[in-house]
Length: 151
Ligand SMILES: CC(C)(COP(=O)(O)OP(=O)(O)OC[C@H]1O[C@@H](n2cnc3c(N)ncnc32)[C@H](O)[C@@H]1OP(=O)(O)O)[C@@H](O)C(=O)NCCC(=O)NCCS
Image (tube, rainbow, N blue to C red; front, side, top):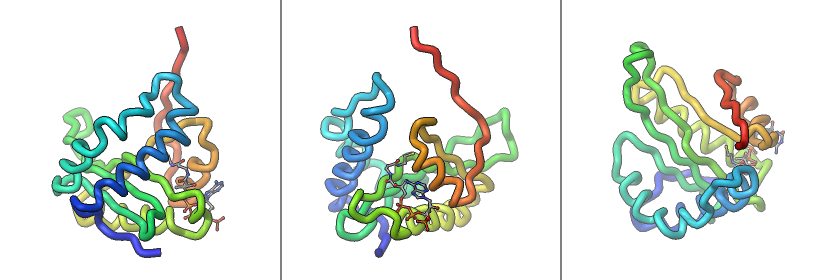
C-alpha cells in the first residue's frame, strides 16, 4: 500500500475518510460528538491543513485511509518538549491488519523527526481497544489519562 502526502485536490478523499472515523469512533463513543462536522466544515479545515508546513496530511492509496499530524505550539510549562501530535488516523475496514496503519504512523514518525520533534502523542478513546493495541504496537505508551464524570 502506498502512502502519500494529500494534495489540495485530494482533500475530498481525506474528508471522506475523516467522516468514516467520526461515524465509527467518536460518533459511537462520545455522546457529544458532532458527526456532521466533516461534511459541514471538513473541506475548509483540511484545505488549510494541507498547505500548513506544521501539519502532515497523508492518504493511503485507493481510499485506504488517512493520517493527520501536527506540530504543537511550544508549551512554556514544558520548555524542552517539541511535540508532534497524531490528530487523526483511520484505515478503511477492507484494508485493516495489512500494515497500512503501521505505514502511515512510520511516515508520521519520520516527518516528526525531520520537523525536530522529540516526542509524539496521540489520544484515543479508552473503549477503543483495537486502537490502543495498535498504538502500543507502534511504541506508544500510556502517559496521561482523561477522567470524565457525566452530569
Ligand atoms: C487502528 C487502525 C488505524 C489500525 O490500522 P491497521 O492498518 O489495521 O494496523 P496494522 O495492520 O498496521 O497493525 C499493526 C499491528 O497493530 C496491532 N493491531 C492493529 N489493529 C488491532 C486490533 N484491532 N486489535 C489488536 N491489535 C491490533 C497488531 O499488533 C498489528 O499487527 P498484526 O496484524 O501483525 O497482529 C485501524 O484499525 C482503524 O482505522 N480503526 C478504526 C479507526 C480508529 O480507531 N482510529 C484510531 C483513532 S484514535
